[in-house]
Amino acid sequence: MLQQYNRIMVAVDGSKEAELAFKKAINVTKRNNAELVLLHVIDARAFQTMTSFDTMLAEQATDMAKESLAEYEETAKKQGITSIKTLIEYGSPKTVIAKYVPSEHQIDLIMLGATGLNAVERLFIGSVSEYVIRHAPCDVLVVRTDLNNQLPKEE
Image (cartoon, rainbow, N blue to C red; front, side, top):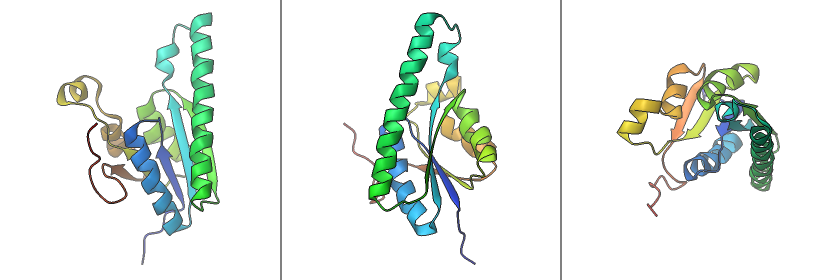
């Protein structure tokens, strides 16, 4: 029996890595005739002091996320995806991507870009993709290559 995914989530943040994951997610979603869930997580820890300045920054981050998700959604529609859900969540990206959204939205495949952290950065902060792989209740696909399965060229 062929594995069929019904609800595929891709975490997008505007990075090149997320862009690669998004492009592959479109293809996987089409092959599975699935729903595509586009997720942008705003790291709420950056706004913890919540002065009026921080509130303004949080609102700006939300507005930028809405614009970005609208662009991703439009691109997916142009590629033939008919069932799309966009989500903006607040919190630690690791736990939102790995635990909260998959359980709340019955996600059965998470796709995300590989991070560009070096060994020292991973030691101190850990990569989101590593955390998601270890804690997600569903399959996880970490995307490293473009649509031709080639590593992206360094700029």
